[in-house]
Image 1 (cartoon, rainbow, N blue to C red):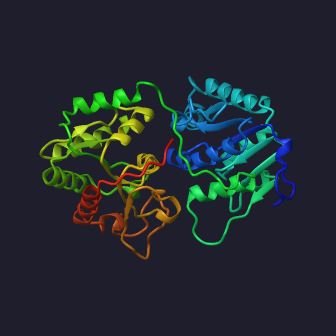
Image 2 (cartoon, rainbow, N blue to C red):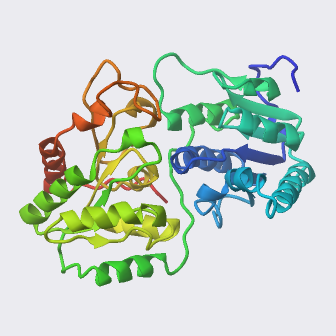
Image 3 (tube, rainbow, N blue to C red):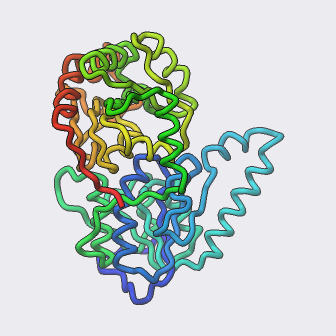
Amino acid sequence: MTAPFSHDPVPMEQVQRILIIKPSSLGDVVHALPFLSSLRQRYPDRHIAWLVEEEAAELLLGHPLLDRVIVSGRRRWGREVRSPSCGSAALREMATLIAELRQGRYDLVVDLQGLLKSALMVICARARFRVGLAGSREGSGRALTHVVPLPPGPLHAVDRYLEVARFLGADPPSKAFMFPSRPDDGARAEALLAEAEVRPNASVIALNPQARWSTKLWGEEQFARVGEALARRYGARILVIGSSADLPVARRLARRMNPAPFVAAGRTDLKVLIALLKRINLLVTVDSGPMHLAAALGTPLVALFGPTDPRLIGPYGGDGVVLRVPLPCSPCSKRRCQIEEDRLCMHSISVEQVTEAASVLLATGARTQQTQ
C-alpha cells in the first residue's frame, strides 16, 4: 500500500464497485453530496457504497443514489473499548466492519477525508484503485494509488471533491445536493410549526447558536438580542434549533428572550430538520452542520465566522451572507483560542451587523433551490 501514486486517470471501464469514504462530520458529508450526484450521473449502473460514521449516517441512509451505506461507530467504539463491560462488544463491531469492507470486493475506493482514520479503512477495503486528494494529512496519502492534483489558491470543499469527480470522468460534474427523505418528514415539520403557533403568512426565523468547537460560538445573549429585534421588526416567529445535546443552551437562550421563542432543539432528527429548514424564511447561525444543510437547501441564512475560513467551508451557493471581522489571528482553524481575549474574532461581530444582514435577506425574500 505504499507504492508511488499516479496522477494518470483511473481506467473506469475496469471499475464496477465503488466505495466512498467520507466518515464525518455532518457538514463535510453535506459537502460531498454533489460528488455523489456527479458519480451517479456519470456511472448510473455501478455499485456505489459510502462509509460514514454514526453521527452523520442519517444523512445517507435511504439515499436514492447509494446502493449501500456502511456505518462506522468509531467515536463510540473509542469510548467503549476502555470500558470492561462494553469493550469486547466494541471490538466485535470493529471486526465486523473490517470484514464488511473486505467482503465488498470494491474495485475503487475514494478517500475524501484524507486522514489516518480514513486511510485505515482504505487499506481494509483492499481495492485495486485507491484515489484521494493532494494535500492529504497524517500520512494517509501512502494508502493511495492515485492522487488528484488541485488548482492553486483557496478552493471550497465542494469544489475540491468535484475535482475528484472530474478526475474519475464525471465532467462536467453535478452541483446538486440530493437528500434522502421519508413520506412524513414534511408533515412532521409542519406539526412542529403548528405546535409553535406560527401565524398564517408569518415569517419563521431559526436561531442555531451551537457548534462543536467552542471557538465558533458567538454567545447566547447576542443571539437573544438578534431574535428579539427580528421578532419585533417583522412579527416573526423565532425557533431555536439544535440537537438534544444543545437543549440546555437553547432553553437558556429562550429564557433571555421576550417574546419567548419556540425551542425546537432536540425535537427533530436530521431528515425532519431538513424539512424544517426548507420551510423557514431565515437561519441565523454559527459555522455548523445545520448551516451547511441550510445552504445546500437554498435557505436564506446569516452565517457568523471566526476561526474557520468561509472560502474553504462557508455556505456554498444559495442566499448566504457571511459575517466575519478580519483579524490577524483569523482564521486560525483552532478548537481553542490562542489569544488572551477569548474568541475575539466572534465577539467582534456586533448584534447590529447580524440584525441588518438578516433584515436585508428578509426584505428580498429570495430563496435559491439547489436540492433535488
